[in-house]
Image 1 (cartoon, rainbow, N blue to C red):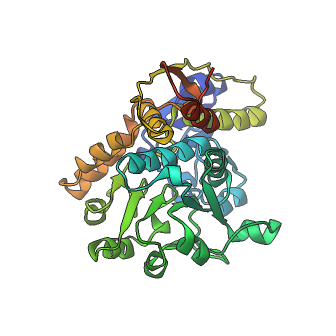
Image 2 (cartoon, rainbow, N blue to C red):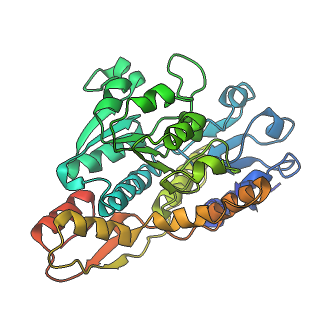
Length: 380
């Protein structure tokens, strides 16, 4: 009997990657149910699908792969106790998230809310694959980095700092922790009323991890009462019917797409196909090569290197596009807003990473080219 692989329709190259494993059935991630899985041997999801006994009990599914770095949507103890092999894609979109954060900071730089040329301190909370990717690029650009990661500090030691110290000292606080509700180091409401009060005036808070990591009520209160704070939220509590009261006050919004570069999504597919291939002894699969992305550069003759660099970054991906799409949903009902949030993710336009860019421009300054090169743009 031919095997069947059920795949979230938002997984790129699903038919190409899993076609030799059996019949590929594409379904909406939030529309998965036991009826769809009644004859499935493998399930490939993204973060919108809760995979647990309610979904899988009584089905023939024996492999679950999530094309994401996070696993809080998987009931891992239940999967393992029922002999179901599971895997995730750690690090697959780490670079995408790092570039999202830096693009957001470039937006603030050009709006004169943050001076990137003055080596601001970026506090990175969570030093896993994603936080480390952001740290690498930030340090390459000459920015000052502070790191907080208690679990890693306990295991490795090193130059990590306590959360309170990081919050007080940082010009930018960027959150990259998994959602952990219990245990020694819970991250639910890691940033609450007290933590927000520790931030420097004019600080930037970026959450591209999980919505519940920030106490939404506390953040809304801080904004309403006039705290000098720039906010960038890619994730919300709850999703997909994100809270309009908070969203209307936030500086920059996006629909949980920080990791949605084409390269990151394809790498997620590759991770899961590789794991399934090992389990089912399938031939190796290599994703197709992607074309270069031509990027015309026309920096003003008197522009600073950082202004030119910020303009370059936003010419590849400008978060303002996602912000406008999200704000168009604010007046809708909960049901309509949730559907719109999912639609923005499902129909997300192609976004490329900086390494794909081919710069086309003349009379580019050495300082500008150095920044571009350090950030990972190919330069001659």
